[in-house]
Image (cartoon, rainbow, N blue to C red; front, side, top):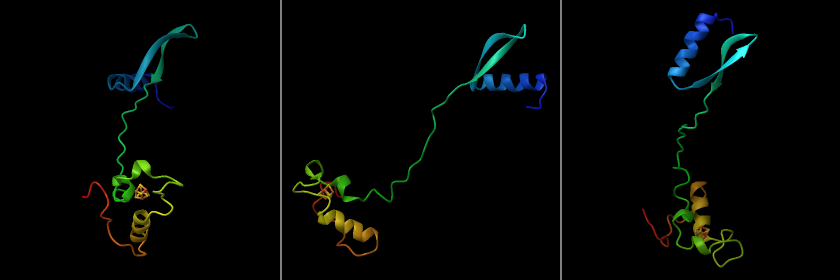
Length: 104
Ligand code: SF4
């Protein structure tokens, strides 16, 4: 890494202080030293923008639990889903359907 042991120790102490590594005492070539381990952190925050999908009619549809391929309510033939798709793709559509349980 092209750093001397003094600089390495300083960096190690900083990483320990910040809780980013742990160390384990070991004997290497007859000398006492430490083996360093990175601490895995999973507190990553990922922000997701749902603006493009929040108006999908299925999210608020009162028939959602009965909807499925081959059912009376079928996404392949659903007028509400078709209208929404046509609207968001710029090909027309009749506006927001009235049948949804939760209107915004
Ligand atoms: S009926 Fe239409 S809008 Fe409702 S869940 Fe099925 S496909 Fe979506």
